[in-house]
Length: 157
Image 1 (tube, one colour):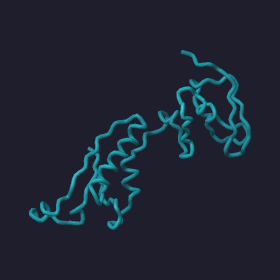
Image 2 (tube, rainbow, N blue to C red):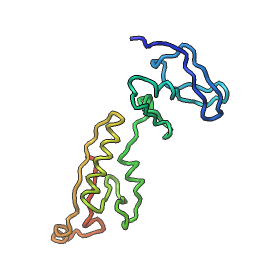
Image 3 (spheres, rainbow, N blue to C red):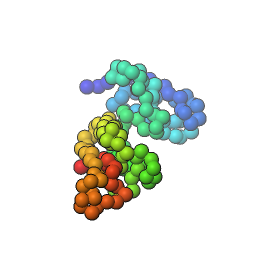
Image 4 (cartoon, rainbow, N blue to C red):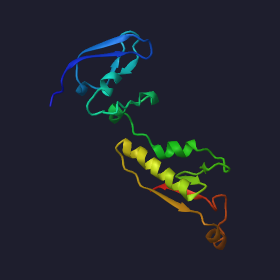
């Protein structure tokens, strides 16, 4: 189905120049090049006024657009967050090993897993995460006590 074609106008956030895209439709894509400075820009005004965007949602502030994320590589949210929590064992969250985020409480671990799953869903992916506990009694019994003992973990499976 061909979309309604019309003139789209967008101000470039880089140089503040006004750009007109004649005979535009969403099937043409949501990006264009500023005719004044040559930077790539998004047609945000068109996006926020679309019927399929009733809340006028715009995520361009993070440098990406949900409209054209299919053209970008998918974000590996688990790794982004795992690396971002740092290595401080005095914090509520930390990680120093591949594949796990350690959390001070079960509630933190469940919340972390839920949020990460939600981020993947928003980019159209499903991911399976699990949570668990490095039980101090079990670790002691098995002579496996280490820096992870007593911490809850989130892992991608």
